[in-house]
Image 1 (cartoon, rainbow, N blue to C red):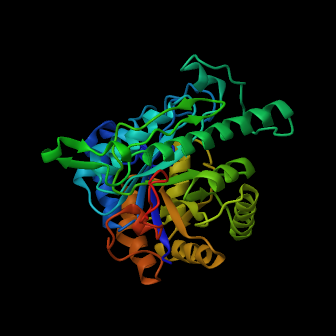
Image 2: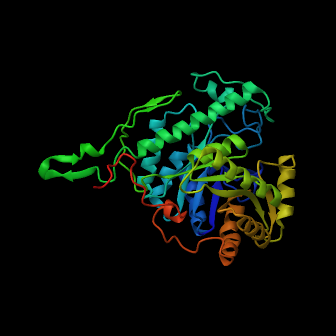
Image 3: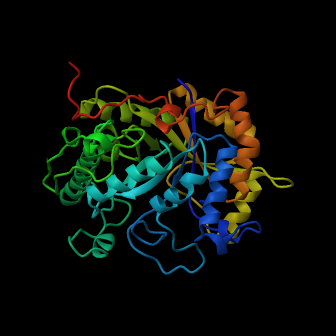
Length: 400
């Protein structure tokens, strides 16, 4: 099985001062052309997939409440709509928007992502996200959630119960979405003018999902898409999110800071699979890493220090930050492959600076070591990721 490469796009880059770099394009962040340009660079890297960040709340230094900072990027476009816009004018690369499931109807999620699979000709994925805080709930006004603040005290029974319920709801949403994707069989559209039948009604099914959080009758209004089941991913840091991934996802992005951390996380994910009773394809585990690459006349370490000074803070995030040469970062990626990871998702600290360096310097070094693909040789994202590509609808009658 191949080792895989993903690239995570977010605004002007993952460092809070990235938008102030001389080559940054802060005036273009809300344009389609900006995002198309970045996906084309990721294509040049021959990455398996690119992800687009999103959330209900405006970006903030606090993940649960807005801040009043004026020196950082605020505001973004809808990730799924960005992916839909770039899909017809990109090739090969998988497109994986973040779509939040809390407060969101599964029916809407399913048809949006199925449409993306059609417009991309089979390259769609989905990064599942939850929204457990009071501020985000207030944007919808239908539910009252508790106030959250980091770090969590999950020894608090009420908070632990709320977090568990939020992720249980997410698992139910993913199940409903997957069922809606299956509600049309592959050959339900027959387009037979002679018999006046555009569809075979026996091959379009109700799904009748009854959850304690919602109910969905179905069928979807969108016929079964090229992949049948677009790729489902999630980002996870702790036990409960690992269990959501084990129950619902094809692959999970995790956040190691060092090798011993990476080894522990792999063990926790496999334990979550056992608790969830997962069978069939094992969960692919990809390591997330922020990269600050050497540039002409400036080392990655010096670039990071300069960016931190501009931001007025020693920057830290939810995963490891690696500053240095393409060779040194490739060494780290190779070590994770040897530990048992299926792939790595690179978060460029600056865009276009680090994203361009990934395509120009790091991806070729990874390819030289057999850690990245050399061509888009399969037509779908499932194929690129070595996932089963012949996924029949669960509602299709077994062949006689």
